[in-house]
Every structure is written in structure tokens, then in C-alpha cells.
Length: 310
Ligand code: AKB
Image (cartoon, rainbow, N blue to C red; front, side):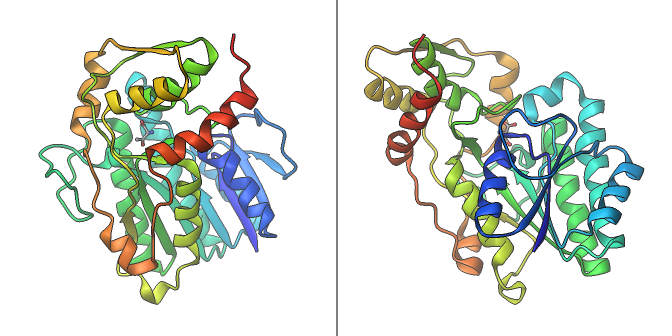
């Protein structure tokens, strides 16, 4: 199958390319910047905000399946809301319209816990009023609604997951959930990390292999089993202190401290503490494999291999 990944140079894209290649797809990567890591797939320079560029690439490739990952995350998005609007919202409508015009069968979209905002119950279901507090969240809600529109209006098979904060050996760029991966990364790299959140900050988190599996499994699910286009997916919801304890247990001598940044803490406070993913479990058999200790055991050796302690 011919697959196009937008935003392929980001935290999710680089790992997704390998999985798609391993299953034998003809994979095409695209991003506005050149790849930061070795790869052996065709790499297309693509600015998703440019409708002519997006349309030309779709016309040339005619991808059957598209993973649309290109986006600016929450913290970086607050530094430049207009650019975030252009990339996240303009980029998504350009991709959906090009998919419709050039015969793409399915578009997978990565939404987020940032789509939600207060007031929220302790366990947040799929269907609840959406009050995002960041431009990133606003544009992800719009992306969900646009995809749903293209599905109902044109029959484009649009599917999306609402991701928790993701952790992997690839560092994220510009997210508010970054305190979690940075605890591991900096503990190994320099032996200490000052987190920009409170110790009791609690949001849903997920280890990347589960996140990638969620994308691939949702893509493969028979459409007739799906009762919606957009699904919550969840794994674990530790407090920041629990992550710090886990890191200091696994990296003896590491010092994790807290110095909350009011703006980023306010974003974290506006997000769900835990997600109800029962509809994903029921409709397409979603199950996470990693909790916090299992993730730590798998992630640390991978980070150690990349990062000899300074
Ligand atoms: C962010 O922090 O902006 C992202 C997200 C939770 O979607 N990692």
C-alpha cells in the first residue's frame, strides 16, 4: 500500500516510518524540514500550509493511506498562535481536501488530550463539551470536526486518536507534557532535572510503542465496527512526583526537583487527569501494554544507548 506521512520528522513520525516500512508498505515521508535521523524512505519537502504544495504532492503520489501528523504542539503553539493556526488548522484542511481530490482512501489524524478543557470530570469520556485553552487544542478540535465532516460529506475514511502525552527515546519538541520525557532524558544526561510543573500535576501519558500500535490498529479496524471517527486512547496517569520517584529509583543519584511555570502549569491543569477509552476498547479492541514501570524498563536502555552520561 502507498502511504504518505506528513510531519514525518517529529516524535511520532520517525518511529511510525519504520513500522510502516517493516510491514511492507511503500512509504513516503514529508516534512517542512529535512530529516534529523537516518532513514531510507523517499523524503518530500512539504509545507502543509501551502495548498498548492499539498495538492501537487498528492497528485504526484496518489497515496492510498495518509498519516497526517504535521502540527505545532501546545507550548510552542502559545508562543506563536497564528503560525499554529496556519499549520494545524490550515494544514489539516489542505490535507483533507487533497485527499478527497486525489483518491486517498483513509486519513489517520493525531488529536490530543489538549482538545479538552475545564470543567472536566475525573475520568473524561469521548463525548463531552470541548473547551480547549490553547491554540493547539483549538486547532485539534477543528481538525477532528473537519475530518468528521469529510467523512459524512464525501465518504473519506477519516479516523483519529486523542493521544495522551507521549514518551519515547525521541525527544518531543514544544509540548507541555515534555516534563515527563525530560525527567528520564536529563536524569541520564546530566543527573538532574528541574520540572516546570507541580509535583501533583497529573495528565494521561503513554509510551510510544502503544501510541504507534493505536494508530496502526485503528487504521486496520473494519470500518463497520467503528461507531465514530475520533477515539480517546489511554495508558496511565501518574503524578509528576510518581514519575520523579520512578526515575530516581531507576537512575540512582538523579535529582528531580520542581519549579512550576505558571503558564505551562495552567495548561496542564486544564487537561484531563485520566481518559476513558472504553469505546476504543469496545470498537477496535484497543489495549495498552505499558504502565509506568514497564515503560521505564524498556525506555531507559534505549535512552542510555543514545546518551552516554555527561
Ligand atoms: C503537548 O504537550 O502539547 C502534546 C500533547 C499532550 O498533545 N504532547
